[in-house]
Amino acid sequence: MRQTGVRILTEGKIFSQLVGLALPLMATGFIQMAYTLTDMAWVGRLGSRELAAIGAVGIIVWITQSFALIGKTAAEITIAQSIGSHNPGMAKAYASHAFTISAVLSIILASLLVSFGTSIVSFYKLEADIADMAAGYLRIVGTGIPFYYLSYTFSGIYNGTGNTATPFYLMSTGLVCNILLDPLLIFGVGSLEGMGTRGAALATVLSQMVVFALFVWRTKRADGVLDRFSYFVKVKREYVLRILKLGTPIALMNGFFAVINFFMARIASEYGGHLGVMSQTTGSQIEGITFITSQGFSVALATFVAQNYASGKTQRAQKAYRYVLATLLSFGIVITFVFMTWGEAIFGIFVPEQEAKAAGGHYLYIMAFCQIFMMLETATLGMWNGYGKTLPPAVISIGLNFARLPLALWLSPLIGITGVWVAISVSASLKGLASAIWWKLSGLKKDYQPSGAAD
Image 1 (tube, rainbow, N blue to C red):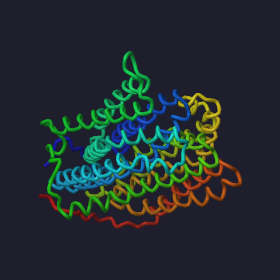
Image 2 (image 1 turned 180 degrees about the horizontal axis):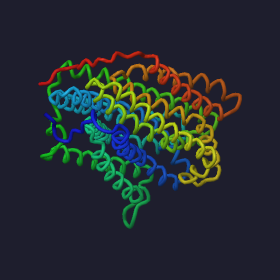
Image 3 (image 1 turned 30 degrees about the vertical axis):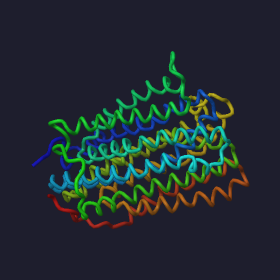
Image 4 (image 1 turned 90 degrees about the vertical axis):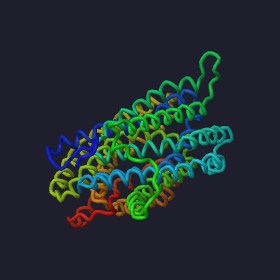
């Protein structure tokens, strides 16, 4: 029996299905990035000091938001595999458990950010006015963490069913709200006094609330996903363990990546001042063009592979991987050329100051050399996730991301801020190669063993 809104991926043309899944995912990813870029574009008009403030906070929020991947990733994998094995009851149960876990976790983390924001920001040892702006921004953004987590989990549930378009439409609405609210709250209008960086934070939170409300409305309609599954349930051990087993490695992988960037920003601050922090934080957001494109195909591939693997169609899954690799590696070549040629001009869109443009352009030039390997890593991640093997890519990512610190500490005294950027680029390239090689040599079993039991 097929449930409402479920898309079957075990039959039909492979490439067209992958593209159909990936395009909304990519668009959704760009929308999520646009929340931050919109803030940066407007705050950049205030000055590089204000931009450094929200850039520093961006890494802290990134660390916190990484744990939203526990519910999202687990929902994508378990729901897709449940559909592939023709077990709709299990899919519904996993959706409810993922939502419940995300709600509890997000409230805990939001409380920590709001309560200890100033202490966390003090790690950067920023100048007093920048630190004050960063702490104020963090406290406001922290209140929106539950809305972000639960919207992210909703997105994972829809992705797992093969419906990647609905999250795109709802996230788009949130972006429009953010675009409209940012200039009003940052600079003020009429009798409304501008709030500066705090206004940017408030605009983001209000937009996230809108997206969450839209997801609730959409899922509770008569044609809601998975027959209007229950949001909160009394959790069962087998489901909780499966969700944590699948989601935690990916969350730790992304969280540890953010922590390393946190320390790398500290090194960048030492050797490049606030321009070094600004180059890394803003530059990584621009660099997200490559990541989001590959991530869209990665999640699409994971959903496609999960269904086909659970249906015993592993050859179809392997063919999909080859399609995704060819597509993303071609795109990676294009991005490499763009960053090497027009990096400074691209950076200038967000920060008009000439000195900041030059520093950011230098960052993008060095990052250009690892773009293809980033594509390789995230494409292969789709295969790992589709098979429910989330630990190997996490091991690779955590190990090689950690290597950035000693490499940066060795190179920076020799070549200054360039040493930090080289350390990032080299480790990113090695991650892509290691993930693809490990997958090739993995020799995974081709039989699917479902976990959990339907109610």
